[in-house]
Amino acid sequence: MSDGDYDYLIKLLALGDSGVGKTSFLHQYTDGIFRAKFIATVGIDFKEKRVVYQASGEEGLLGGRKQKIHLQLWDTAGQERFRSLTTAFFRDAMGFLLMFDLTSEQSFLNVRNWMEQLQMHAYCESPDVVLCGHKSDLEDLRVVSAKQARELADSYGMPYFESSAASGANVAAAVTALLDLIMKRMESTLGRSSLPGAHRGSGGGPGGGFVDGAGDAKRNLGKGTDPTEKTPSKC
Image (spheres, helix red, strand yellow):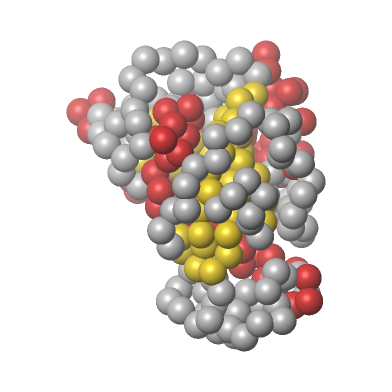
């Protein structure tokens, strides 16, 4: 894909307490690398990646076609002093990766606080969210059980994944699940005529998910990226 060759620009926001591994998660997803050294994010940063998404089913609005997606993955600071800056970005995001550290009970307890912030500041009261219990490779240091985490996720009606930037476990799966939620929301809110390629016949295909990635887009904000271009409506 060339720089402007995509069907949708979709913005995802990673949030959670400082130190839960948001930055390392995004580096693993976009670049396939693990950075063990912790450097606190100051304010807001972001990564980009191009993917091809296989729409689910022939009867949906997306008609089973492959959609070219430009993902912007925003990395937020978890510290309290940056909270007002972080929440200012909530309304522009299509979906959220809410993360906690499986070795930190406090980061898990604070998930409810983050959900309250989302419900107040996101594009609607029930935004698309995937909960990630991160650092699953540190099993000996684990203090939050899978049962506790799943019960919390179920109480909010959101998918739950246990991920590791070190091993790569469930990093791509969590993003795939979130994008699937977003695309299904689009199917329920957009008219067929609004979708790219709607005049063409359905391509059919398996359930929703990423097909092979189509290359990373490694551009800085402002270099040819229009934040409003080809961005689908959210509710």
